[in-house]
Length: 56
Image 1 (cartoon, rainbow, N blue to C red):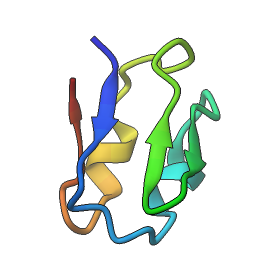
Image 2: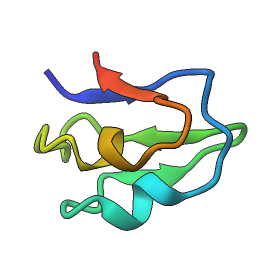
Image 3: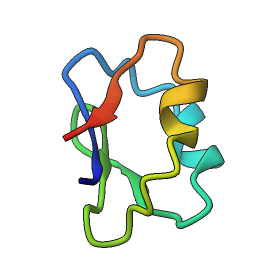
């Protein structure tokens, strides 16, 4: 199951720069993950300062 970014996101961009699949992009209010591109590596969750990315 792909990762998703919760409303806790502070839009810092740390997750996007760590995604090897380039599955994370800036949304209107927070970053979003393309579920089809997500490889479930967990890099985004490891670097997020607020714990916003989690398995959906």
